[in-house]
Length: 359
Image 1 (cartoon, helix red, strand yellow):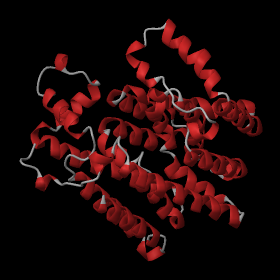
Image 2: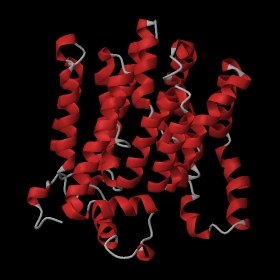
Image 3: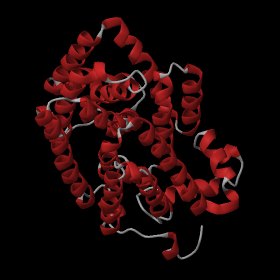
């Protein structure tokens, strides 16, 4: 944990000083540090060795392979340098994409906030270290979003198809094309009001929705294998999706409503993607199977939140939003390391140089 904390603080500080004109290169240095340190990780996360087993399977015929064809071909391509080599190269590639996104879309004075979101909100950098396949698809999808703003539909579809060949769940990225068209049809005011109504209804009536919709699906469809994902222990209002999520959704929903018109067309797909995640998140407290689906859209926070904070003219509201995000995210970061689900798999940071042998 200490290694991760030191790394995170260092890259956020580098990104902060990169706002100054003669120090822009520090942003690149921050991403190089992330690439190298995370690229040489060993055994980090609960799926690391599972991916190694998958890598070994790729030496056989494709008929014995149970993952998407894109991931099979990527594993095949990296046979000459081994699994550790693949992890290093893919980590560098992912951070190169993220560097390009941040450099291209984030005002320099908010570089540090974008990096903070990425490294301290555990659903991104840390979980990305364990769910290698989906995280690669997520970053390809994030990189592709600017194509929607530029109306380069073919480029977006091709990049989304590439992501789909790596992880089928990335098919959800097609919503990034559909939602902007819906916004044009209904208008900004009705779009935001409609989303707000859905959020309030789903949060307040979660138990009712669970009983009459989810139970119906379980009884009348062949989803018994996924029954464990259709459960919830808590339907008590905002507690179901967590205090952190609830407060941040409310604050940044307000900022988005106030500043959406000032966001450039090129960047609006990132903000719309975050709003898609706002819509999905309340459903995750009784349909936990779609949690990972949310991440394809919520990862756009890295671009959206710094943008809306930068556009906000109310000094107090702007800084309250940033401080609330920081406090709640640091708290959830600590909970992540002390929790039962992932804590044991991330508490010790090891490198490939401590491995018994290179794999």
